[in-house]
Image 1 (cartoon, rainbow, N blue to C red):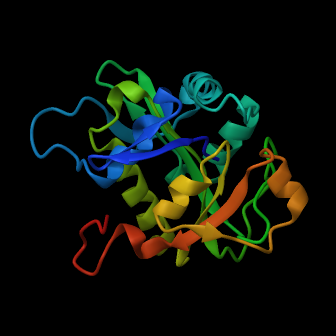
Image 2 (cartoon, rainbow, N blue to C red):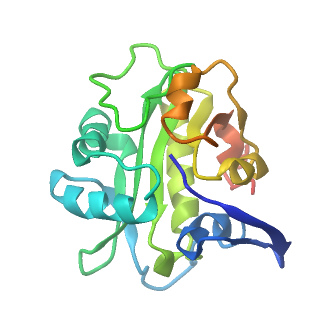
Image 3 (cartoon, rainbow, N blue to C red):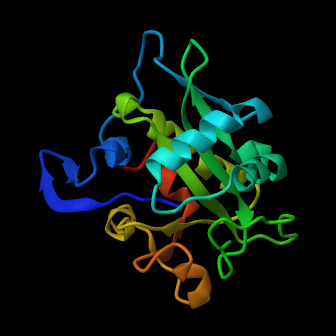
Amino acid sequence: MFSILPAGRYDNGLFYLKYPYLEWIFPIMYHPAPASGSPSASWAPMQPGHLPAVAALAARMHPGCPERAEVLDERRSLCPAGCQVLVKPDGQVRGYMLSHPWRMAHPPALDTLLGRLPARPDCWYLHDIAIDPALRGQGHAHAALRHLGAQARLHGVKWLALMAAEGARALWAHLGFAPIPEVPAAITASYGADACPMRRAADIFQNNKGRETF
């Protein structure tokens, strides 16, 4: 689930967004992680105690796609490897990513418990990812997407999939994601009138030499 809305302008290598708090995604294409020095925050496995902070951040970053805290926590319990938090040295949670293996043709509807993961997944599904705008441009989103691509390869699936919501379709199309036509309309509609299920080959995030390709 993503709620990023481009304002329709491109300048000096960055899109400018209608909603400033959603600017975090674009710098991933142009700002690699700092080469040296102490990081301002780092990704770590999401723990049960992180749930209140994650739920609060989700409500702030995705006001048009609200979900219950138990839905977010179930993703963590079902797939710990795909769920991480961005933590500052003082312990503050300033971002999160929730992902898991799934079937592209039937993505979960908004605010829906999964129950279990599929026995034969065909994609790594990016349920949600958010980073505090104060930390954008520091390589954290880039690191998150590389982690997700690595999980896809580790679990033997060739696709990354997601639900672009709240105007995010153009952004993900720019990153090479394409619509998934066979998804039931009722599932897509649960994310809003302009939602669009999308997919992209998982190897977008790493070429044969192990370096990012964007």
